[in-house]
Length: 214
Image (tube, rainbow, N blue to C red; front, top):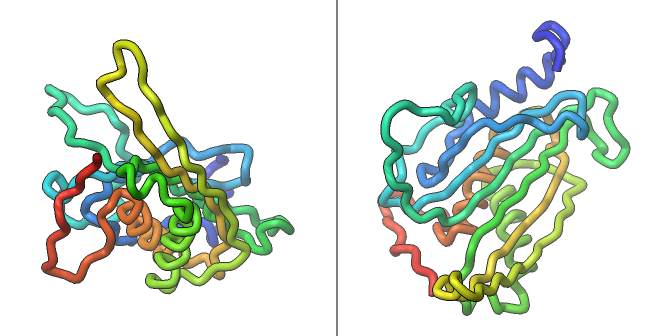
């Protein structure tokens, strides 16, 4: 990306909106290198979801911007990671035909499921429903949405046999925001990743049940 004076004001306004987003406290956000071939301007965020017991207080997404992963001092033992994801906002003033707009959100979410849910034949439909409902609940108006849901069975052998078999769900999706106000889209995605992790949105003051995998 060129100098700041070359960045469209529309994209700068969108970045400001992302920084103002209030994300779930189970979500740990970090800014990642943005892809350079998908659009002239882009920003990428990575997320990890941890059990509520280890979560920090709810915070603005601005905490994820401009901070590298390097830390001084001993690294504490990490709690179990429940899900991971990426949120990428693309901007092309040329308005690509396939986008039908100047912005495009591209997302990736992966989570490990318990055996009962992982074997559900309707799992892909359920994953897509989580995305649609999250966007609707946050008023994140959009169009031209598409995506794929993939179920992944991992079997372990030999010295890794004790790990047992696992089933993961991956969702890759994209959509075009109806405007450059993308704050609600990041907030919806925050809920979406937590739902994949087995921590759906709850009324204020209600604690979730402990997350378990069989």
